[in-house]
Image (cartoon, rainbow, N blue to C red; front, side, top):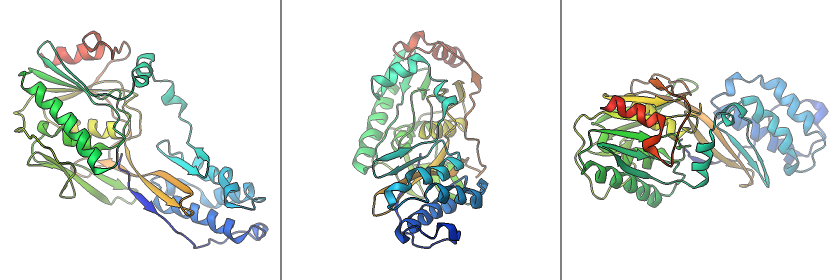
Amino acid sequence: MRLKLLVFSVFLLSVTPAVFGQLPDSVRAHIDSSLAILKAHSLYGNKVAWPEIEKQVYDKARTATAKAQTFEALSIAFEALGDKHAAYYQYDDEYKVANPGLLSRYSDSIKAAWSRGPRILSQMIGDIAYLNIPFIGVSRQQDIDKFANWIYDAVAALQKKNPKGWIIDLRLNGGGNIRPMLAGLAPFFNDGIVSYYIDRDGNATDEAAFRNGDFIIDGVSQATIKNKIPAFKPVKVAVLIGPGTASSGEGVAVVFGQRKKTRLFGERSAGLANATNGFVFNDRQSYYLISTACIGNKKKKVLPEYVIPDVIITGNDAFANPAGDTVVQAAMQWLK
């Protein structure tokens, strides 16, 4: 959800058994540096039996003569974290913790919709406004502004049609950058704090809020909206979620879940509702993307990594024809 790129140079060596003393100093330093990042920053680092994992890592790496040969060994530590939101890249290798339970929950219609690529779909279904917000994987400010305005303009155009209620569909939103998403959806929210990130020691950071029509983090506006409209009067909003709702998509659902006159429909989300940070090291040849914090609500209460809908509805999603979608139909019944 949140991605901060941190360039790391770590040279402190941990005490390693003498049996591994034949490893080149550069290889041993690389392994120790890699493990130090996971121990210090992973959301799940305190749950790992590190002495045993370190032994396994060094045993696997005992014949390594170069840093590039440590990938499989360090993957043992990565696996031990159990971080399904994480990824490990080193030279030409890539590793992610398997998540077969989530993969089995993807319907054929979700896969088909994803194959067509991300797109923002906005339309009226009768007198109800329907808006589908996809994955938005951008990081440059100019792109954040572009997508924020794209969503915002779609909201403004639908508002001109005087809808009786709104459906915000997040079922295809696999994450990316939450900033353009919430900046584009700002008209739905009054001023006030909506979320924090809570690290494994209970520290709250990244205070997210809406103020004067802007989405802000720690007091700083996250996107420049060109053609602002007034915040909406209290309006009913149905938010649709499912297994395809992950990471930042789950974060958007959490923010809406605290809003009055809002209900969530569908299935439980992917279970990746946390914050990630990126760590670049080894002369930019290694990269860790790891979970570093949970999502907390506006009262700094840590929230589960799954988002559970208020109304559970399974099967028969139809992204190519929203009006015929079972979850959309249930949401419309409530809105009316």
